[in-house]
Image (cartoon, rainbow, N blue to C red; front, side, top):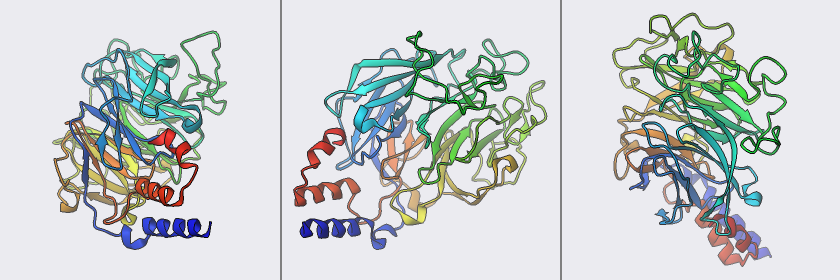
Length: 449
């Protein structure tokens, strides 16, 4: 027993020692040859694997972290996903109790939005394709601006990012006349962040709706769709919860002028209006007859940056902060101490990799300057990948240990650095189990090998 305890502390000290967490950063390519990758995530507590979404094949691939092997058999291939432009398999979220119930959720288009629950099979590397259970669906009028990120918040509810339905100016067939989908909160789930309870069912007579609306959602009992958490969005492309603070961050892709980042405190009661289609970043949408004054109480971004040749209100961040389409990222909570607390994000069209530290300004007071230490990593040799190149930043992701990944639509997955010389957490745990003869190892690995 004393040997086991001593060994545990020795390995823990090796894994977490300051000397092993102060190395200069360098990005590592951990996978390549992926078809149209759009997301990376991990199951709760599973430090041995990450799951990669292939948008147009509908497949979820497993990357084994101990040796960076891409398993040849897909975890799941979702049938019938659409393959037009921005559509496909776009989101994946594991239930907080995945280790005990095996449930996970996918967001895909066929071409309408489908949120579906699946369950893992007896093999932890293969899901049960026959376990599909519809959760929620809604119509997508065009093949772009589909949103697609889903994730569980600290409150245990499932959050769903939906785009405005596509086309330009939120103003085409399938868009609410005069105001657009983003500002329409009645019988319209487009251009929103939704929040639902997947552990309950408000619609027992409807086999296609298997969820409940949390009673604390902002429009429960008043005018507005009960599923809505926030609205006024064009195409919220990649969101995340800070695993330490619970604060919520997301990018919203602009139209012709400005890209924006938004932040929401963990304590928010919801109901925020982020301004689209009237607002693009900090300005009135430039299209004639579309843009206008900021709606009363609407929330401005914590940062916005311009397209080339366009003008955005707010400070000029310099020539390195011009882009085409923002990709929201993650607050780093991994093993490299000098990166902890930095929010990493990028731009899809230019391949820029940036980071900042949110200054915690109350979102109602946001004015586009609510950050410190805004940094462009794109020309920093420490952020040049060891192999390959970062070209099309389709998404960021996070593993169970808090390391951050960059998803390149060209088929490559990169990881912000591990400490030089450190034993990966999964490998360290395996060594501990092997040396200590831990009888629980078999039970743990049955869910996470």
